[in-house]
Length: 136
Image (cartoon, rainbow, N blue to C red; front, side, top):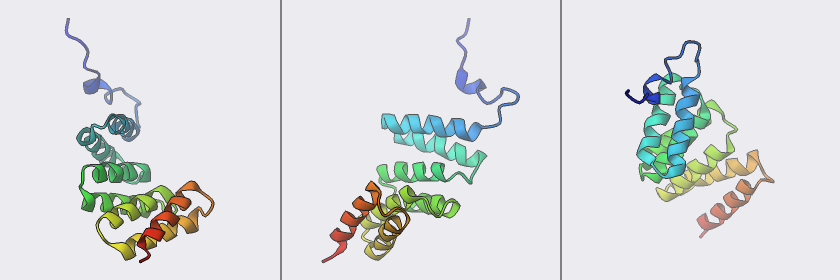
């Protein structure tokens, strides 16, 4: 008897209407394992099913940044922000990638946005530290 290949059947169940969530969860599992290429593949599939989930774009941004694909990371973080302008983590991720790219003024704006959105948070504290690094 052939073993059941769950990957080939999981989205074929009648009534299952959230494949984007399933692909996102699989992508997160791969991301947590450090399997970044596989994570990107599954996050992209999630976007194919439902493009307006900011968390998926944020996860793509993190994953692309981890792969050194900074231009794609910037696009992904900006997409997350487009779908949820108050998404603090996406602003922070964007700021960090922009800083890595040497785009200091854009990074400064992203970190300032984090502070404006969540002034008492730990991520705002980290943003303040990043801003200090931008000051000559």
